[in-house]
Length: 206
Image 1 (cartoon, rainbow, N blue to C red):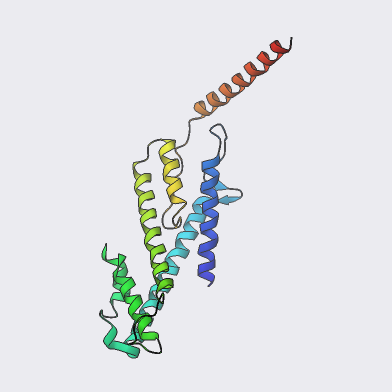
Image 2 (cartoon, one colour; image 1 turned 120 degrees about the horizontal axis):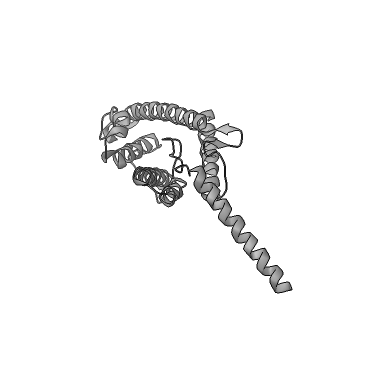
């Protein structure tokens, strides 16, 4: 539970950092590697470490469940227990192999393992797996967008996709730093436009 709580905390924290970047004005100057007093590089490192630890604990637990299912109703298990570990690392195949194993574990753990599935009995399991697949795909899409991003707009679009998926699997690339001359020019333009507006207002009043 502590690992899960830590993952949720850092996911929300890093999500807020992404929102801050997306909502920032073009002329606003801030250190994109920090969020308040926090060093985001350190936050990403801790978040990734927690994610890996959670993944290891979950896979060990999942494998133990699969071994227990062998005792409860071994003839219902269509894959060997090793797939409960190795299945997560099979490209493409991990999109459905693990769900099938989870369903077989569920059936074996029932009071009547050989009974037909009840109406909506697998709704919770299917919902969990749908969220897992959706998060994985969204995370992959945002990662590909970051790889090809060249402009601030490209990074913003990738960040918007990233908000829908986990942010602790990789260190999120920051917006490309704007040269000091660009920031100065942007502020000068803002002040110049503001001055022109005030002057025009005074002339109109006269």
